[in-house]
Image 1 (cartoon, rainbow, N blue to C red):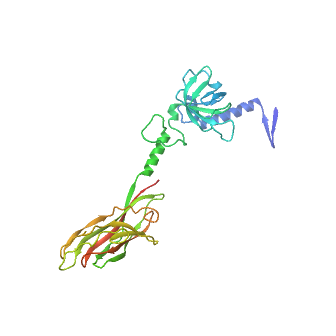
Image 2 (spheres, rainbow, N blue to C red):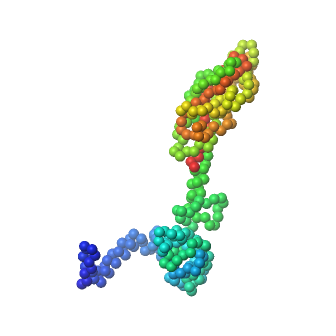
Image 3 (tube, rainbow, N blue to C red):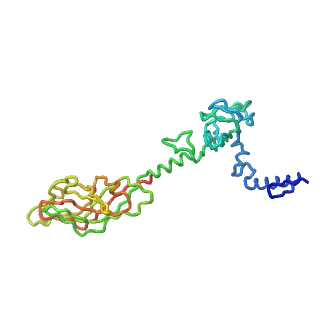
Length: 326
């Protein structure tokens, strides 16, 4: 009997013992990595001849390498396969380790592979040869596909493309203020401060606001002047007058959101008409504007009508917010 000493452990060793250990190890491996080609395992891929480990014997340039253990498979057998450099003998994970190129030619008698250009391989580099049916699944590091379906992008590339495109989808949500019983516009220019606050909530984590617009709805509007028809006096002057503005409630700067034209909301003497929804066409998204879950204040800067007065009844103010997750 031979005694082998390893540090502080003494192990009895014999040919029979070695055979038994090897048998037990193989049993364990075959249980963990089934030997059947139909099993879902790395071993199955090897037995099904879908992957090969090809140690590099030599390399003449950046598009060729020789693997002497890969001699004899028949010319062009590996054409179209992916050559994935598992390990670079130079160490430190240096290039071409991790690179993936397609085999364009294979010479059976010499084990010579022609591949797409890469950092030149060296002797003892390890290449994993992968059958197209397996390689088409791809690698986690594959870039996302772009544009139309091709014959070269992998399944991973398309999954990444789908995820990226999904994140870029523009979603929208509407948020409304509590009801406001009345908004009154008089002939004396006056700013209607803090008409309402709209709370933006439930935008998902990571949401990027790409556009936001303001809205005002009312059940009815009326001219309460007993002898003269009525309407707005003057159009919007940007950032100056006759404009509904929105600001962050921290407080923040007010930004124009809903513009008006001169003579809008024409009403007959003591006229009363059904309401509507006024939708602003000014994008009020961005830093310091509507950009996240928060409260936003509405005001009507220097509102003015021809006569006393125009009343908007049962009002609400709203924000429509578009966002993506990228």
